[in-house]
Image 1 (cartoon, helix red, strand yellow):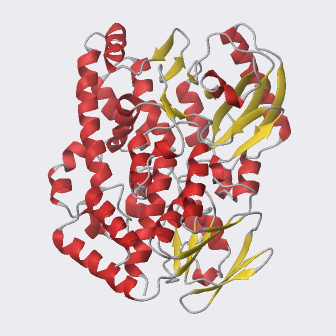
Image 2 (cartoon, helix red, strand yellow; image 1 turned 90 degrees about the horizontal axis):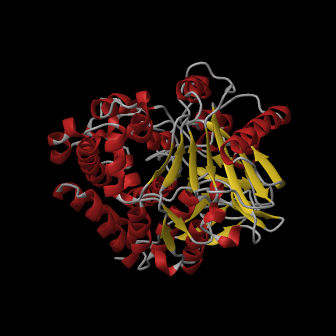
Image 3 (tube, one colour; image 1 turned 120 degrees about the vertical axis):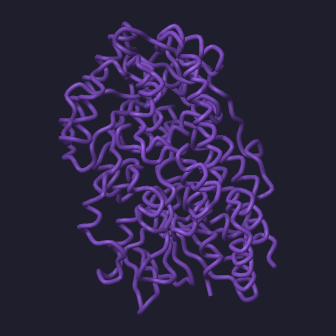
Length: 522
């Protein structure tokens, strides 16, 4: 049996711990697959999920070609440079380092082979109306601060994080690394025994309120699930596992920027023989009865045994004949989308005083902004926002003595986006920064990025930034399937399918799809 396939089996069994009969069947399926020639594979999209599945399949012996419409690897995790500044365009939080180590470990590598990490301390800063707080990396210091806000909150934090650690351990072994193809995946004695402890049917908001009464503590504990694309009242409390990732796993930064991850993955893929073709957009998928027969780009035509949609799922579906699409336009319109974002990439001709790498501006009405995203979709009147200042931790991202800023304001997907609106919020956010810091150095570089850009660069459905919200009914089998319902050789990975949005889920999504292909290809 191909050694790469054997390694993938070991990795899946270690983390999924399937019942013996299922494990044996998976091994038999893989063995049958590898008796003959492994499939040729074409991956549409060179984002983190596409790079992940390309690496796993190339390791198993497949011939893999990756196409991307853009000029660089990484998808939303791309980078651009201007006037001496280097800006990460998308993801800026590096959580769950164990997932990244696990990924590279399956190729006999480790993260340190490609880039170095520094743990940020404080993890991030939060600005409220009445208080500014640095959230310490040290749990002991964090407990002390919790008690200063609400007597007894330190012990409550201990209980909360103990539950979160259980959820993290069980979810990573039993849920996250599952492809969501069949309900049988979840018939597991540990899951059944621990069902109540997983809090699947309790909202995150209610769960947090059981432990903490102070509004600031509640917002701090609810904040991590915003990465999942919905407010805490719509997210299952299972996802308090994100608090474990935050407060126990820590907030990290790859020296050189977040782009170091897709760069490392690209190097790994190249070592494994993956072929990349950038600046080439897929415009049509031609089909026969049950197969994608030909992939047509704006430059050429390709055939492959397996096609993987690692770009925007909904867009790739539109490249198929209507009768070959797994989901209708009405079905997509019925989904709850995670927010989009208005971004500003700023270069300052000077440094800000007393700034942190990550800052959350909760100095506006939290509920009002949430309502503008989820209840009555509109551009917010007084927005909350997030600021990343990577030049605090990394001298290479800005010229000496200058500051690199990334501002992100969440907005509902599907709104009208135009330059006048962007200008309005640019002025508003700069005024907020001046209020906090006293003064802001001259902005010598500015680029905005919003829904129209997400649609142009990624064909993002309704301009969303984070895929589908991870609500209860849009988790696991509630997400679009990683296998086409109509075409036997078409698969999907990325933020619109399992496990969901974010860098760690993207890595896992690629692995899950690679496993499905190796198990099912004939």
